Amino acid sequence: MKVNLQSVNFNVDEKLIQFTQTKLDKLEHHFNRIIYADVYLKVMNTSGKENKVTEILLTVPGDEFMIKKINKTFEEGVDECVSSLERQLQRRKEKLKAHI
Image (cartoon, rainbow, N blue to C red; front, side, top):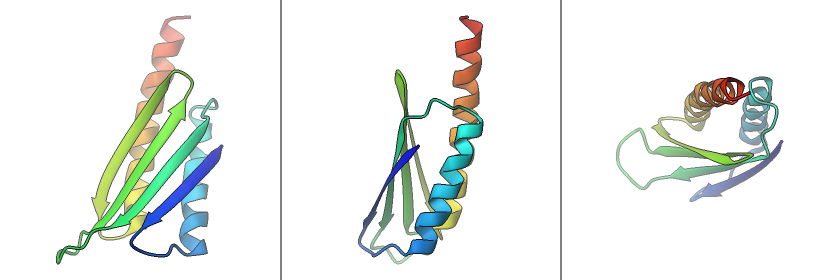
């Protein structure tokens, strides 16, 4: 799967890129027809601790899934987004099997 990662208001390090790639690669175990994923990592200019925004747009044939989470760290955000996407891909896969 092709992963397109963009960071807003900060420079992303290689460890975070590898972490995100590894987590998203695990989604292919649940649904093997994923085309690509767009990942947007943003730092909001707020005084609160939860100022890291993680958005993932996952494209599969005939559909797109968009997840947005706000957390203290990007790793937490990626974890939560991937677990939400796993549930959505499972539902999508079950619907496709029901129509066959």
